Length: 165
Image 1 (tube, rainbow, N blue to C red):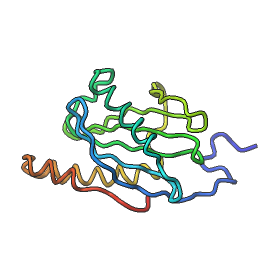
Image 2 (image 1 turned 60 degrees about the vertical axis):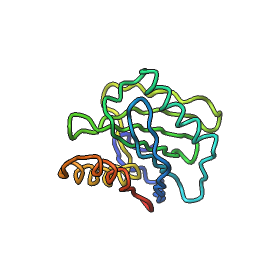
Image 3 (image 1 turned 120 degrees about the vertical axis):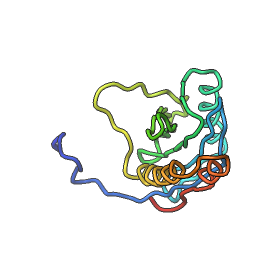
Image 4 (image 1 turned 180 degrees about the vertical axis):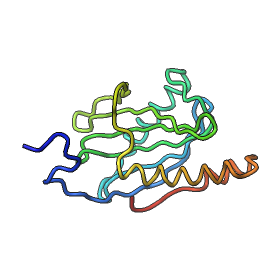
């Protein structure tokens, strides 16, 4: 039996994933970049993308979640050997902080997204998600160091990561 405190079980085999930028989304005043984080051979269906976007849009527009910002990014991460969709909505708040809301969907049962309510010592970003987060950190830092006018906002939204993470 593996030690629960062991960070990497002996049988774990790491596999790369890709970050794929998709169309922006604006909902409830929050403008977001949109990324898929997934294995190379996984194709996110149009239905899953629609459902994911609708969940974020509904929560923003109906004020079920206060994303508290006008700028951010979303990760639709296909995880757990393609059994789970993790929808991670990140918004820039307090000038330089990432705030997040996480939704989980069991892809095998095709159940609805459920918001992951959090308390205690919990996971944040995995190694694949951190590739996108690092890119977004650098892009937002460039935005913070700019005059922050409309052209600078658009430049931030055009700055997308694509490729292996």
